[in-house]
Image 1 (tube, one colour):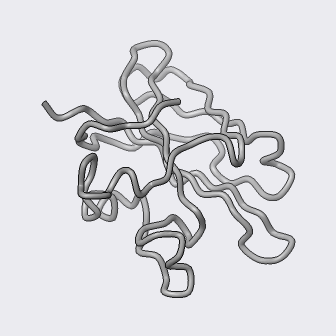
Image 2 (spheres, rainbow, N blue to C red):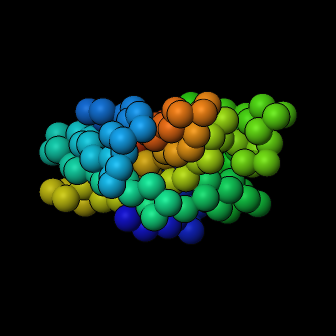
Length: 139
């Protein structure tokens, strides 16, 4: 699990086994798998609330890694509603949105995972994985 600081191109979205975790399903961590687009290997993902990930703002801030348009075009995030704008301009389902980079354990293809975590309503805490996308660094 690492942050991404170089400019990237999104290539394709990987299949994620489970992307929705409610309340205690995410405690102490949400565990799922994604299938590598390149070699079809299963890769484990473990997201620990309040420990895993980096703010999505790092990705689109000054378009250093990806532009806002690229994030929106690939359905990685949506524009945040006015009432939740304190979470940032772009989020996934109006909850605090984070990301991390990971590699396929078999072929070492690079992937970005975007997820949210937070209280959707009193008594309902969600961790949702927006998706896992294969990417390449731009030279």
